[in-house]
Amino acid sequence: MAKILLLETKQGLPESELPKDLEYSSCIAREIVPTLRSLGHEVIEIQSPSVADAINAINTHQPDVIWHAGHGQKCMTTLEHEDVWMTHKSSSYGECNEDRYLEYAPGRFFSMLSCLAGSELGPRLVASGATAFMGYKTSFWFVACDYEPCTCGSGLDDPDEIRAVKSPMQCDLEWLCALAEGKTVREAYERSQAKFQSEIEYWENSTHPIAATVLQCLHSDKEAQVVLGDMDAKIGVSAPTPTPPLTGTPTGTPTPAPATPVPLSSVVECIFPRILAGMLTPRLDKGVIFYRAKCIIDKWSNAFGHNPRGQGRTSD
Image 1 (tube, helix red, strand yellow):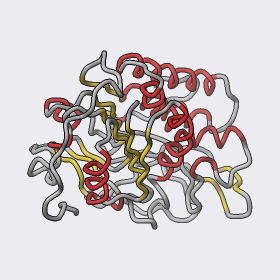
Image 2: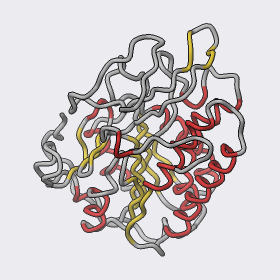
Image 3: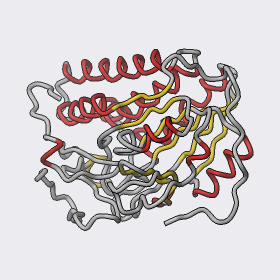
């Protein structure tokens, strides 16, 4: 059986911009832990990990599989509070001025829910010896709530709204679930893609006002998903190559109908997460669920504009 490390990030962006932005995915990861353990795997959970926490967990537990969610760029990914983790030297982004922690790649499977990282960082991890990588070559889109977080559907009563919040993350984690069941990298990718398609078909037949928004997310994420490495590999077959101990201090720093999807080229390229336009819907006595219409941009961009209470935005 395999050792699976879940780096369960909670907050990436400043909390004032989107509370618990990364918890929307990590809470779904925690939901599948009992299933992973029932299949005989050892699951290590690290909550709100800094880079030092992540490296310590890798050195201590020597995991076969590493899953995490974090803000990213083509050449990098981050952990809690945008702590810069893995990078490869690249001219595509200013922070990527050196290779960082690529020595932890050999023999491992990486599931990286991080915008854009599948375009450059993923191939570099495989070139550095990773057995397999699953991630996204463009931005990852999902539905979130303004003002009060609704991670894993908390605080929501409408079953479709709960499904809308969870759906993209569940499609992502289907890859890990399939690997845990003994599927190959290729079979796990096919399972994840099939999960995306199943959700797309559900929402295409839905009359819920949020359906068009969820479809935009799912179509974009399904197309962006990329899997690299040994497509016939399975987890738990052989142990990963031991990695050196940490020294010093880590560097921190669609096409759905009838809806018309937002063209990705028309919106500023941004880090995880991107949240699409939707409807204003009643949310308990706290206010409204507000599905933002513009990219949320991280601290590395000057393009972010604050959204006033209760006011919608449109993509530009």
